[in-house]
Length: 266
Image (cartoon, rainbow, N blue to C red):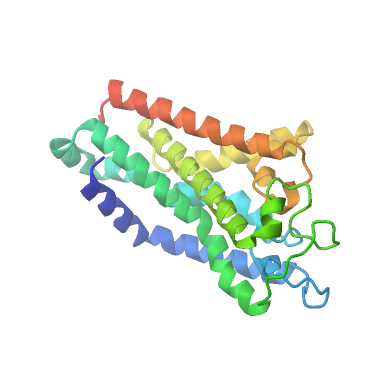
């Protein structure tokens, strides 16, 4: 990996119009969260997580966030190689760096940027939620307005250290967004069609969710297995999450390795 190129790609994308779009979408999700959830003061559910995007299973913001997550990650992290290729900069990079260095650096940049894009909507909603309801009380998984059900795989951690659990969930979302961005980048390795790497992850994830929902297994789609408060009731949701991460990671590594060994940038 080339550190200079890595830092340059992070800086360029984090200061680009793409981040502005993601922040704009995040603001829209925060507004949707506030508009469509319960007034938690009235129901005496004193945990600010009820106003955080994705942590509130009663609002529409969580589903909307998971629906657009693939395109947000692909936008910030998955378009790096396509941008370098279509601008012609890939030729100048080839003159200074090996193909392996370029591909590994771009892939790592994609992962980091995709992960950042994935968690921005949630991180953006946290300060707003804390202003609206600045309480962090534990709410039992058996209560009427629970955040996580008692059969949730992370429930014992939630019971003893809510902050640790939230950090783990953010980490899982970061990794998922990063993997989606890498898949998007891999798509751009193998096609010259502009913007296809931006659209395909979103289209595929939506089609997949519709298919598994039609056969009665919606928890196999990321719109359910990453919706932690809602997916708690499914006994195998942690298995689907693990399998999805494994497939995305192994598939990306195999295709990236093939690109390094057999292809060129022409």
